[in-house]
Image (spheres, protein in one colour):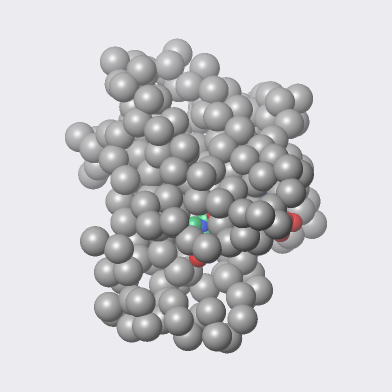
Length: 246
Ligand code: NAP
């Protein structure tokens, strides 16, 4: 029980990696807030989380909207008490090559992946600074480091998220807040199911361990970063990619 009685808010926690994080943290004893645009899925996930015997609430949240974000953090604190862990996990893709990428494709991805993490981190820091403790974990991507054709918007948002993480780590270390990022490689979820078999085959060949990762591979590292075991780690990026980038 590495997270016993801790309270964690996970954005985009209704499915995929976020859901695995929610279920994994609950098994370690944390109470969980699932904040997602898809409230129906979020409620189902919260129900599943409660089978571990912890508290769990679902909140409808669009991370790119300031009003939504403030309401979500207020509801979370009212229902669960303190906020010990924030996982900035909500993310979207709008893939196409640079010359075809519309301004709205750029804005949509940056608004969710980067601005959303900025807005949520700011609300979290307000609460955590008063407590003098807290962990902020942001889900970046291997493409922040290596780029990816068709993902100018996505790779830029994930690279900037690392700058945001390091800055929060420096600004609020003195208040007991740790901020770290995880850069997953290819993880099997709805996001990657959308790719063609040809692209998937190409990606698999680029992974030395020869297989795609699972949402649980990422969740295990989030749990470590959320726990006291990682208290001397801040401003870091942990790569979870089967050796795809070293
Ligand atoms: P996913 O299966 O698409 O799940 C993302 C969740 O976030 C969905 O429930 C989605 O709801 C929700 N969401 C989307 N926009 C939102 C918003 N504005 N506010 C709140 N919630 C929102 O994706 P995933 O594969 O689990 O990815 C999770 C995170 O890991 C993302 O940040 C992604 O970029 C990152 N990542 C994934 C991989 C991978 O290979 N899968 C690799 C590296 C990094 P809807 O479904 O209703 O839109």
